[in-house]
Image (cartoon, rainbow, N blue to C red; front, side):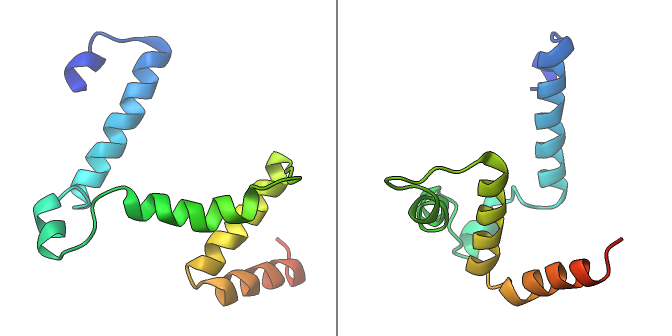
Length: 103
């Protein structure tokens, strides 16, 4: 990608640099060490992510007669992700605290 980015300019270069920076950061943080992940027997396939998307997003957000405005859908999706991750109490406390003490 770095070699290809030398031939790009404008918007394509901006997009490529965003991806290069993302991958570089992931590498530095050790998130691309597949040998270590395999040794820990952690999943590296997309199946777990696709299953979670089905459970968290599709079953809640999609269906006959459901229509969401983008802004509302993002709020509901964020809340659903917090619930699924087991962070509901912290999430709801932060909302209540923000409403009580704005700013």
